[in-house]
Image (cartoon, rainbow over all chains, first blue to last red; front, side):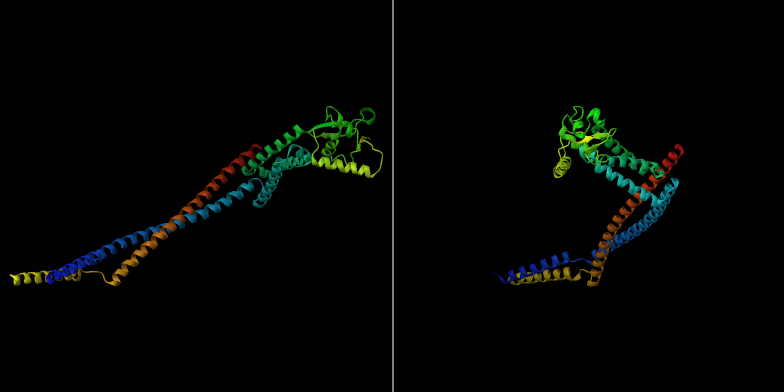
Length: 253
Length: 90
């Protein structure tokens, strides 16, 4: 290849490299434009940041003032019913306990609920007492007590639907004992269900062999014994067997 | 003829070299300190953008907090009115 051509090519190469370098590297003018652009942007952002900080501080101050106003308002609210925050907290805890009890009772089966009738009655009394407190006039408590009332009514309704009663007559006239009562067609029509009556009336029957004329017995609903009732019956028969006494049917005295 | 061709070639080569040098050497470029100044400025802008983003989130949070307290305050005032009414009806 001709030496001259080689020299020309080399010169072209140097020229091209120079051209590329000149294009890639930032010129002073471009630098100044960039500095100007970013300085403007920085100043704008700084100003925006200051404004944001100022806004946040103003909102925080408003929140603090509103929180103070709220505390004052709550104190005034409790004062209207002659209470204070501590009494309201105590009352709130009482309502919560009653709500928990109601929820626990509402989860029970009908038969188990009947067995815990006294707890339903206790809950009714508690709710009545809670209504008697002037704090109940505050909507927070009023609304919760109203909901609680509905639950207690529902429990009472379930109990009433489950429970019928029987007043014990005399042995000489009615031959009333738990066995015979249970055997009556209007009760269970099944003498073997007598432990159901016993367990449904544990508060007034300590010994199933002893019931008294005039006693008003709750007759729990159902046509078979629950596990608790079966267990109580087994224990009863075991005691009787241990006593080695002649078999005596539970009888009214 | 060859002499003329050689002269033209030498002239062309010289012209190309000169142009390259002029292109690279005569253009004004920022020095290192100036480039650092630009980089620092860019970093400052990026930092401010991040800070603003954080502050905007903080502002949203305190705005919500204020709205919640104001709602509670309004409910409390309403409750007072209700209690007064119930007391009057008793």
